[in-house]
Image (cartoon, rainbow, N blue to C red; front, side, top):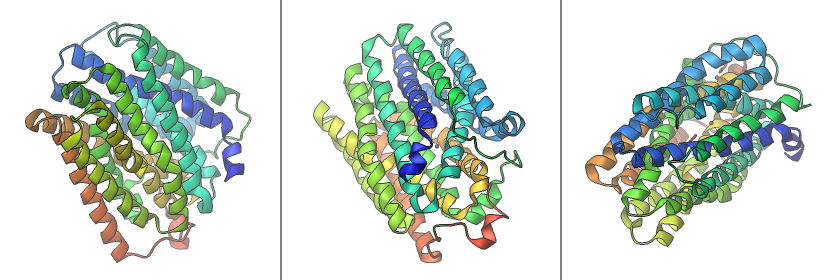
Length: 399
């Protein structure tokens, strides 16, 4: 595992800088939209535009990777994402912001596909869960740092948008200067989602369910905190606590999933995450300390879920098809996220702030039921692609 991680240092550094910028931008836009008087459902729709762009990016960006390679694609998309960030404070209009969020989602789809396919190609199946856990830990730590930057300037100022742009631009440097070999050129730029369902039905069903729940949190979680009467500093602490909690558990969950059936790990995490979500819905308004503590528990089990599902799918897929495998999962995750971001906002507007987490709990209980059904229907996959599935194969990880 350590050899695989050390070979990806420059890529992981780029990911850390990139996710710090993305974490700050997502929270900043939700808070700024609330301050500008956008309604909660409108903020949910606005944030879902990111996932609409993400879906389009999952479909189109593989073509760029096939034409010019992984590194050039990453550089081009990061440059566009950096520039787009600076337009938000110049034109404060919900329609314009929707288009900008879609463009951002398009760019991040390509960059995340490059990063995750690169990691999965280098990782061995026997250590894949731990390698992906290190990646997720870096992702989460960077997101905490990004969210913490929310308190250094007013959300209504230009400075925070400039910081996001700077971070996304700096992510170019480690990738442009890396000496690590790039992933193998891809043979096809087309995502084959039906085959993904054949290779890993659980991951293919789980990806949109996870998006359905998690996107609602990332979209209106900051609005939930403000609706409970807390200020922007508590918003930053709340969002950071979720990511810190995930960071604490992501490596243990990944390590356990390398040793036992990953589906059992997902069942346990989904049940614990659902309980934490219900507790947040009921007791989040008691005090800031209670809110932050429950947020950490919630993040510990909910946020790592997609990484475990992705590792489960990659166990069954040939590593040469890593880009298509992860792109397909991201596509399905984004489909769920579009619905989830809006659904969470509507539920919150109709039934009160706490209903957001009741909704998330229901989705994860359903996911646990799907996992249990698959355990009863099918043996756990070997930690390598099954011979009959490797080459007919599967072809494609937030807030």
